[in-house]
Image (cartoon, rainbow, N blue to C red; front, side, top):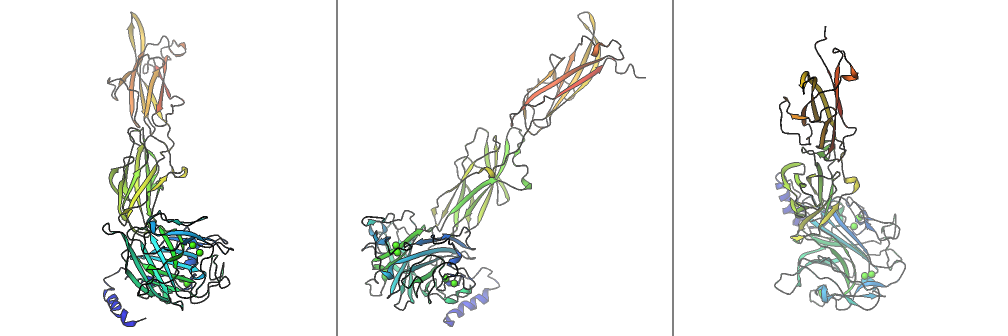
Length: 597
Ligand SMILES: [Ca+2]
Ligand SMILES: [Ca+2]
Ligand SMILES: [Ca+2]
Ligand SMILES: [Ca+2]
């Protein structure tokens, strides 16, 4: 390492240390990913073996949970285990990096790919550091290591890129380059060292015919092998390194964790493995790649500087590589602070259900302009609204079905935004769905949707409740058609003691034909409409002229007159009838005070 080169930066670092808490930008090989010429963790960082699950000789799968900061990983196998061929993903002559994919690239099946250009496995991952810089790491294994070589890595944006020939003749690639596609080409010397590594940008500016800008956007060389120390790097924004020693293959305890193939007895000899990285942020190219293609060249190109850009391409391995993405999850809000959820609305006829909608940036690039859309279809009177963002209450923002509403300006890699959505609906439980939208690098991402599962729903048990009281209001003598008779007056009070509105409420008295609706003071009011909100009361008065006293009693001191009131009604929310029907009986003595001694 050249000490003078770092002196100004070190000085600046020391000068600004107190004022600059943010991490200082480091080289691509100073990030803690081990660009050290092997596959396993051998220092303090993360290496390829930490990113993939390996089961027997299956193609390795990215781990469900990648190490901190790693947003995506892809592994492409480009050989048939135990067979010498064929390879259905090789370029046919004439395919070049400088040509458009559509119309310029074609693929064919090859039974005999040349050893040094035969890609065996290729893999890539993406990482974002604490300062938000995005890095791509890439690697390939090849069958042989003879002579000088050029190894290339395309990161493409068009999700439609593909080509494979299972049988028959060559065919054209589907898909094409988009502006900002990235090509990294490493030139290895005959001795296997990384001579140069350069990154190039595909340009589609809408003015010129799309082209590969052959002026590189980043230049580098060999990575610093002391990379296990996350603070040490070569200072390069793009670098690569080959394996200096034979990597034994394959399986647990071997240098190569997964199935590989190599000329030298199944182990990867010197320079049959190469790994590299690029600081995408420094290159100004953070965007939403969807594909990763590792390729090889038959010979360096004819350009005087030895640039391999016009060389014919040989073998390739292509896989999905989604640098940007979002996920969305909707479920009932949990926790005792939310209990009960749902709760019955004050109107007693609908439920307020609180949901948490979590939008997560699953990629490594920031996502922007994040919206969520309510996918339920509402009945009249039903609605949902955003009532809080990340736990902070907000003025309710209505969520009209099918209309995206913004919930965040941006979400950093691997971070989430939680929107609290409160819905006022008639359903118990209310099951609905959500779709989330976001942009990355100015381009819309594929939306993410979530339909609620059974265990993400919440419901509440609602039963109608009503209390009824009845009291004697008096007994008096009246003239009924010239006959002296006893008239009994009773008062009735009913109260909705449940949490839901009661409808179809009907009060009947077995002695009183028509009950008079009154207020709490006993003054007549408009006739009862048959419904009661939670906590609401209704009062009635009624008079009747009994034909005889209870039990046919004739002693005035013992004579009482009873009547019974019954109430029927139904819960507006539950639809359940009051059962058994609440009732009360009043027993009015003929002379309540006459007989007290
Ligand atoms: Ca490594
Ligand atoms: Ca290592
Ligand atoms: Ca291939
Ligand atoms: Ca191959």
